[in-house]
Length: 360
Image 1: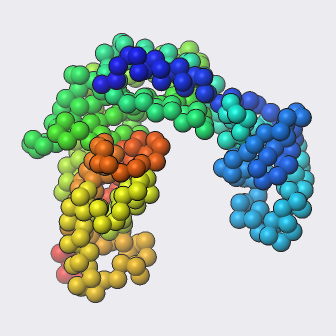
Image 2: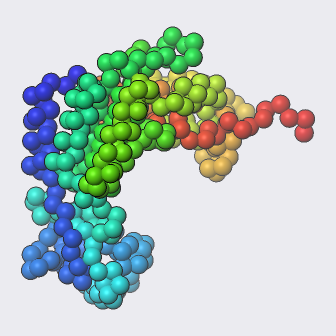
């Protein structure tokens, strides 16, 4: 559990480093270079992700911009982009820019897509939920680039067991996060046996708060109270776990799990067997049967069953995310892995509808 002092320091840091969100006229943004924008006489840096946002807003593709730059040069392509931007600005008046304290634009979005909820309001909401529902704080993440905040909590009284499996015991709580879209509260599930956690927004129990409207706040807190009465656990969770345990993982699902770990850390492919037990044997059997994995298209990978269950793959992802095995990990990668594991659990399983015993 996280101590109150650590939380206060985290909160102070997140509030101090919160990027500024400002509504501006699209016509007021002038592209100076592919790394800088001028606004109101002030030169601001711009990250490539934000430049992609701007290019998209003016109805241009990143691929098209690259082709334009290659054919005309950077200076000419910037002039063309500015001309297009000014033309589109007549129809799209306002956009919202996200600027870090060191004057770097990290996001440019349609004004209508943005929430009015501040970081202060987020922390007040999270603290109220934690205090009213007696939750324990277990994790915190802050993204300085876009201002997203994530807080994980566990309910001391939220223990439950899936089916008759002694090893599948969970403690439930709420994952509370803030993004440009507002505040999201979603069921968070942590395994008691091996302390693997996963976050999922796919069950209907999750709730999003997008404005400061009084009625919406009331609905939000009423929803949280009803969740607590059910032990915070999504009603369909046990059913999905049993389905994942009984369904063979497709090669596409196994490949997705391995790519998540390799892409978020310096873990080597030779080490993956530790997290996906049976992976090596599966690949050997594929080769023995003349199946060249490199030549399979995505659909074929989805229809190719492995010796692992979907739950084995999910467990490997969450195991890696929830423990320190000595690998270097990218910032905030653990939370991303847990959310990805939750998504894998909730989606339609690749092998769920395959009938193996067919007459023809």
